[in-house]
Length: 212
Image 1 (spheres, helix red, strand yellow):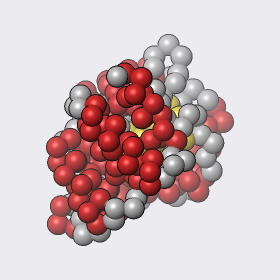
Image 2: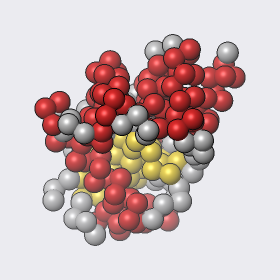
Image 3: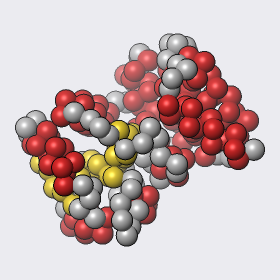
Image 4: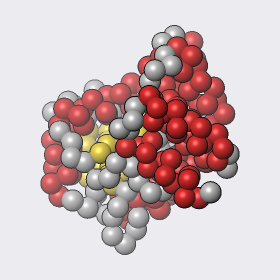
């Protein structure tokens, strides 16, 4: 396993937990305690994935995300957050970050999320023959800011399994990004009907309602 991962987080214990969990799986791991330090590492090294704390002093995670995507649009970035969702979730989607690692998390959860993201690079339109593969390919498209193609595969995922809230919620975020608040509300609402306790959908719906 040769994948290299950059962890940008100002909390020492989080960096240690993630670093140990990923090193035990054979990943190469670099860590940075500030956004600026992370950007400098990213400029000089090649990474397969970035884990980025969205709330850091001096330089926000959103600013760091923007710089990273300007350097390499294709690299996947997963947001680390202590909150059910982040207030600027749509801004993160706009910049191509669709994955979240929510605190508190275990070493096993870290390994699971990282494997899922890294495995996604192997998914092509030809092997999106099930619900989960369609969602993963849609996330891959969104990561590359191919939003229309991502929406197409989210809708395909829904057609294959109409009872899962996740593709409805992501569709809502993309519609909100596009400025289509009516459809954003619609899809957030459907996600909540399917999973009333879905905290991401709750905050997303509250955000668009408050914008109205």
